[in-house]
Image 1 (tube, one colour):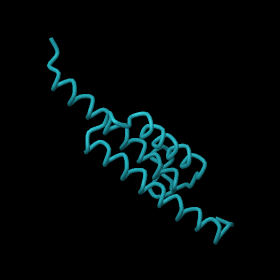
Image 2 (cartoon, one colour):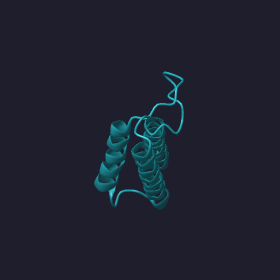
Image 3 (cartoon, rainbow, N blue to C red):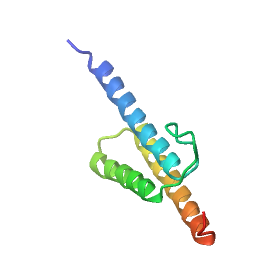
Image 4 (tube, rainbow, N blue to C red):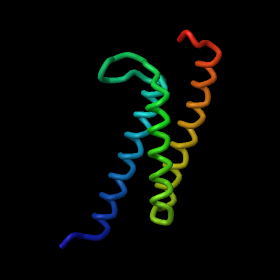
Length: 98
């Protein structure tokens, strides 16, 4: 029989990993870190919006089902990506040739 605590720990670890993967994808899309596939820093704001929207959907669909640590990670990831997105849009608008 599966230990409920073990299953809960696994589920929590999977959730945290998923949020971290999406956050990493957001940073790559925002040009904040190199894309490991191309080894280049490239900005793709449409993909960044998609990633932010995905995280917001997770927040909406998991409301009331996350513990405090999980919710904090999700909220902080969203806040960081939204702030970074705003900064990148400002950079683009100030220097459209990039």
